[in-house]
Amino acid sequence: MIKPGRVFVTAPFRVTHKAIIRRNAKDFSLLRERMREVGRVRYGNVGFPELMSIMGFGTIKRHGLILDPEALVPLLTAPTSRDPATEAFRHIANTFNVGDSEKNRQAQVESLKIIKQLHSLGYPIKIQDSRLQEHRGYINAAERAGAVKVPSTLVESPLQKHVRENILPRMIWARDQWVKMGKKKITIGKSDASLLRDNHIFGEGGTAVPIGPREFAIAQNVYDADPRIPKLEREGYKFHPMPDGEVYDVIMSDLFGHKIYTTNNHIDFVLGGVPEKKVVAIDPRYLKEHRLAIDLMKRNMGIRGVVEVPEEEADRHPACFLPLGNGKVMIDKGAPKFIKRMREAGVRVIPTAVPLNSLLSLKGGLHCLFNED
Image (tube, rainbow, N blue to C red; front, side, top):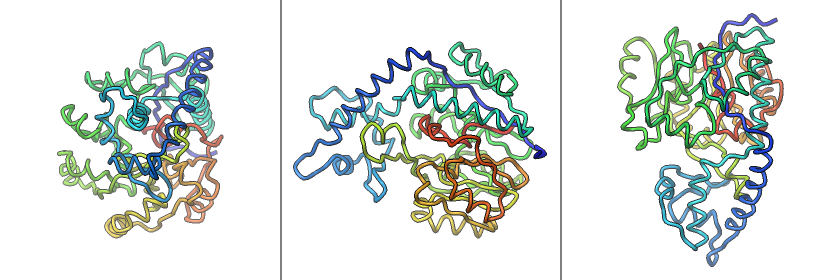
């Protein structure tokens, strides 16, 4: 039996009735057919990904089309057009709000099995009670898996409430509500006035990754703009700013039949840390594009080991793992080559009870699912 040293908190997902899932599955299938037809539209010798690049909505790289979310925002209010390309752009913008109900259900099953696994290992798990009827079924299932229900202490601004009710198909990820620094819970974020401008919502725990006892890799825009960072540095914390990463978008890739990624300041998708070992895991594409920033981090933070995620497992984002303390981490079972590399680096790895094949479809990973209490 592993002697647990941490208490984890998770947030509930919205549960949809099976009849609605079946109906939504048909709608999603029709949408996929339509989007793939649009994706095959060519303008002369220009194909769909190339057109997205020419129009300034993304960049083509060897591994796929990289979309810029900020460039897509104006399309949400663009007038309807009969032009296939214009409509494709509009649908891509709206796809950020599109969910595959079947994948959502599968992701919830995966998350509940992880809750049960952590509980069986002796780690206390808390499930936040949102007091929303749409979350009741998930909360009840989490309790059966071993979680203990606790009141949600999240205080939402009007803008955050609008995002949760109209954009996100769930309560916000637990990891986005705070960052644990020592015994303190720090909300790394900015004012409501900057949320829409910088796409910076909630606590954004995914923008800060612990890589040492008091050392964090942190998103560049948070490091530059959050006034609390200098104060925390004066208290002895060290931060190393890192550029945005590229996150594989499961839903959009499925809809358009192209590999589609979006830029994201949640660096925990592309970078994971084992603070006690001073070992970091890094996405292979991120490593190639930001080697200087990584080399500086290694030097400034005294990193002892860097583990590169295998190229063939990169789209699963297994570096988004869950640190368990004492040099142990939980990693997606569906990335066995990465698990082997981490073990060779001296990290004690516990594979998840099941492969995380659908969790990423909810735009989150294992690190996002749980926070530390």
